[in-house]
Image (cartoon, rainbow, N blue to C red; front, top):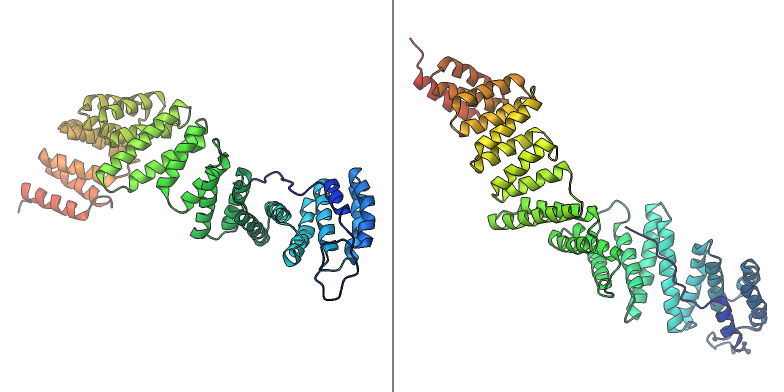
Length: 454
């Protein structure tokens, strides 16, 4: 999620900064009780021309060497130290190879500016913004969670103070603030505090209003905060914006479909469940127009959603063609939905035909025989159902072998095959997938229908 923003350099270039400083008066002898003045001392002022020559020639090594002794002897609360620290920080930033080393002199300049008024409001804002960037950079380059948190917190303090003083921040600044707040909230293994996530959400949402084409990272920050706050409805709305903006992004479609499926599963009211299932279905179909959500699992989800919405004939058609072409994986749970869709659509014969093709492809898997038997039983084709139940138990791989044996016992009792029924009932009792109370009731019915001779 985090991405280092390019440096905005709000401080003037060293040459321009020195031009302003050279015009300042040097310090006159001050009374002992006077506060520190915004004037450079003579030793510092005398060196600024040479310093400017070095910076104009981009000889930053020599410029830093010239600054070092001046900084070393500057009084700790002096205007000299504030100005020299600003210059040192800008030279380091212009060098570009160790920008994190600009943090210390910038913090010195800010501390002195706050204490003695050495920085005007514009300068203070510039230093705060740079510190926010630099602390953020140091955090992203560090792999120690505790040090990262310290850097992100320092960046957050700087950008928060900057935002408090800027009436109309730009999109880049708001994005930087949102990234800093997000990383401060989520660094380490601890769950983020809701208040911290809401701050991320508020700042990122503000950024979305600042241009006609907001940066995508702002949407992603909003989305992540909404998801971590458990606001799935808001997250779905944000993802709808993202898929509209980037319809070729398969990840967005996948996340959006997953949210609608989860919401539909959690919905207790039938009307709400149908509404969310329809949203999920439309999401899959919109995504497939753009080449997303086209895996066999996705295709099965589409068929399942049609089934959930009571569009049984459409579900059956998708399952028939999908199982034949491989667009839907040829596996037991899918065979069962095919049988259910065929029964619900009153197209049992079509479903049986497809199941026969599946059985030919899987001659050693009893689960397709079990799905066939259940459909035949619903069609009152009891002899055929009995045959496929026996095949199912013989071939195995059943998820509910006890239920298959129980249904066989029931069919044999109806056919007055009482001894066979008793054997299948014993077989059902050997498994734990049939309630003992059901087995007991069928035993009572079997005993009443075929009393044991004295």
